[in-house]
Amino acid sequence: MPATQVVRNAPVRRRLLKEGIVISDKMDKTVVVEVERLVMDRMYGKYLRQRSRFMAHDEKNECKVGDRVRIEESRPLSRHKRWVVKDVLEKASE
Image 1: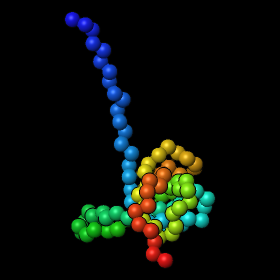
Image 2: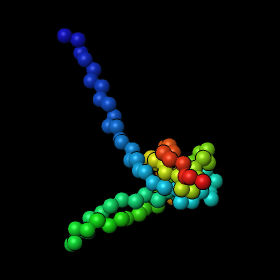
Image 3: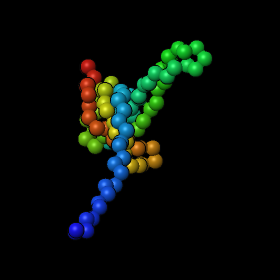
């Protein structure tokens, strides 16, 4: 019987995706994206809106304020940037 070699695949790390709205595009190749989520209050059971801001890399400078974008987790690109703009879901109405 021939010896078979077992090849194990490295574990695939899924990258996080988030959707949010661009609130600032003043930097070069960087946008600030605000992501909103609902969190239930432990005592009252009421849903509260929580917002988080992420700096994301925008290689082509195509995002403008008000655009709805999808961002993807990446390696650290600078001191605050750990996200990359994956695609623009909806352009802001002008």
